[in-house]
Image 1 (cartoon, rainbow, N blue to C red):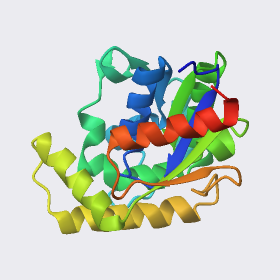
Image 2: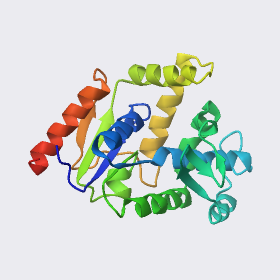
Image 3: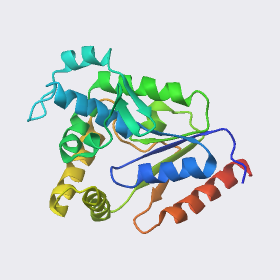
Length: 226
């Protein structure tokens, strides 16, 4: 199957498997995969470590915005980096998960991340996942997908992922965190999580990733005749 030079934008709720789906798409279609969530998590880790966000999630926006001007946050061979330091493990912690949504409401943070993502997207053949990729970052993306799944299914997936990495978590805590993030993501003033008018909904509550890939190939074949 020949896939044209397009951008595939994947939005949706946390722990719906957006990143896993996008990574498989990139491998299957020889696309470049960009994890926008990792960049937001990287900014969150940076804010935590430098005191720009407090325990009660109060953010020193002016100081953080100024610091972002010199933040070298990027993708590398092992994932996400700040300078030469790989931060992949740190950004997947519950501490970061609990603060990433408040950080993502900051307009300057979203501008910072969006600029980085658009640079990568200039060459097309990109698949990107996040919460405002099809609505804000790449509103002209040729394929837009909005992913969802039942809350408990999402919590179980997230808990299993964290336990596999050696983190001791309770399913109730994970579910509460997901529900809080859903609310914050959907109600923030800047680029709230919303389904693009031309996005196709994918409810993967009872779908495997191979089944989702077959579904996507059908969407692409119908649109481009390939």
